[in-house]
Image (cartoon, helix red, strand yellow):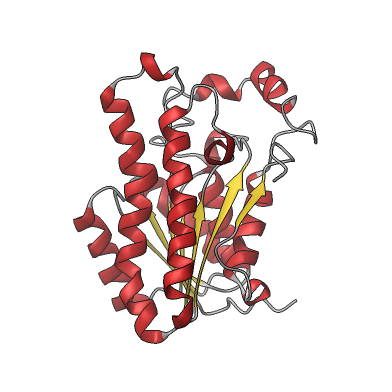
Length: 264
């Protein structure tokens, strides 16, 4: 299969840790030009060096808070200046706070909405004009099966991810005539296997670390028909495929790479 992503300019939000890091690696191995957009520049630079060793044609790191439009506009301006355009956008960055709906604060809800939904809106809107003008472009956004079916203790997060899927379908309908494609990948629970795979500002290093115990891993694994937790590379390979020419007639789709957690 010809993926034809070599030399393409790929922007990956949240590219410094966990799934984002694996996505960076996947595109690097195909010889893409990569921009890592992350609030953690230190971890981003580590991943950038890994990507260069794996064959990336070029890698830049831009400090970006996707909830802030000024940051996103600065990101796209730099990508345009140094890589010529954004051919592929991967809306990967995400954040959640686990808890029952009535026990969570409005501040937690607001942060989930700003990162998971507004972040996707901001970044997609920022690259869209250029893609329309060139009549070429792909956007792959990370969703969640929580957005398909709801999820215990992830109410607002689930609502955000349902919004990501719905907006993706709308964009696919509106801009397919310009040869633009929009798809969603729903990963299963994907935990860093070591601290080197997640930066200090990752949610897996701040308050979520108990999820990475062997006891918790075993408990989570039981929820999946495959009886294990996903590897980040297994999610990244699906993202790479959807961004590539191999998926050239796929748009408006939500693909679950979640070990059979949902089967829709």
